[in-house]
Length: 413
Image 1 (cartoon, one colour):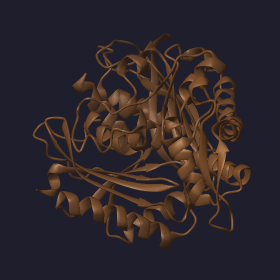
Image 2 (cartoon, one colour):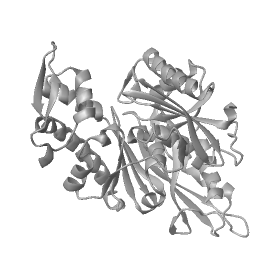
Image 3 (cartoon, one colour):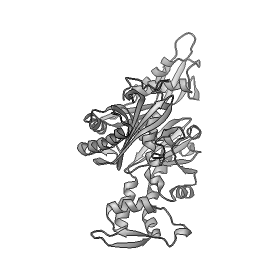
């Protein structure tokens, strides 16, 4: 299989590293390689030990390469962490030609202006610049201004930045493996390609991707991302709570969470008990399931409370009539969807793998793999592939490439 036929998504998470290799022909994604390894050397999505992180990435990529029988040269990498920041800004340009028709160059120009007018915080670098809407001569809410007439074009953009040190250390891990980066992609943006429908994005929806070390939030409206935020709480905090509350080793706590984790106990499981190993010995004891739920529920409530508070503080609580879509490993907790719907009064569902994913679909159907699957779809849906399935050469990871990617997407609508 030729490398130019392939795209590789790499999810570098706090608890696991996932690599997916896919063959793409005519926008059809066939996953042909899967590799996963425990994540070492990261804390809340940030590299704290380059050697350990590099080794974890190597293991995941080697397993995916072996399954697909290929040598991976470059990857799309998901990025998250407490260092991620978000800014909204506007830019304005004049349309001076005689016919006043807005062209592709005008759109590129106004987005560049919006980027230039925003003061990026020191020791930070831009990861994405994403148009939210355009305004033509005071007419707001325009998603595609090309071909319209006007004398003034304004762009409202969402800018994602990351700490330069954190981004550089992530790049170093890949460089040490001689792996190129096609693009760094904000993880909730990537996950949205896997679990959100076009209708949800258009109407308004909140994505909550609850990973191991962080919960990634993204509000979508009119098809684009309007707000994003990373909360430094995730599934590993629930595991730690179980360790303390159940007096059990960390490894056992993780197993209990995966196998028996629940937010509340219904009548059917009222008398159910689970086996729990004690710290410092081989003794097993039986603990009522409802006791486990009492440990898990407060942390889940905290994650939801913080998430909804961030959305409310940003003024976007009225922009999500489609409700909330959950992804990430914590979304698999029994009763978490029902809990969220009951306590916060919004529609809520668990994300699932899109229907246009083929090949090793049965392996990646879990919302645990939303980011890695989404990275594959991001590369295709954002026009990183030509119609013959060959990957375009020369795509970089600079934020400016987002502008060209976004402009190219017009020709696919």
